[in-house]
Length: 120
Image 1 (cartoon, rainbow, N blue to C red):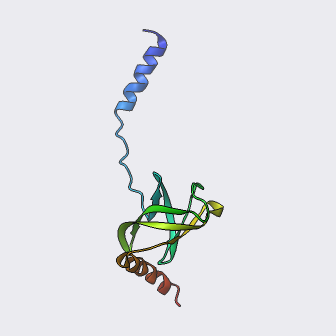
Image 2 (image 1 turned 180 degrees about the vertical axis):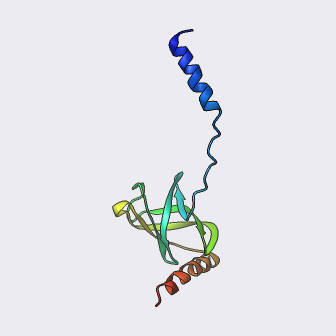
């Protein structure tokens, strides 16, 4: 056994005693497509704005997406088709093409407390 083999064994033994950190659940709302997920910064009955967007969609494009809403006002998910309005500045701004009435109502309920919080 050489000196390097001894160090490899020692380092490996020290790492075995540690327990891995528990996996954290991503908080907040996200939009998912093509195996990618982007956090939603704003959502309303007309559309949404997602941040940290990688530019994989272009303005004017239509896309099928999955949306997962996880906010204090509600928790639900749905699939829909969007029309991409803007993709500049690392943001994705999109309009809903068609939303089922129950999803539209749930989104409207999410936006209502935000309007009242501003004192208007």
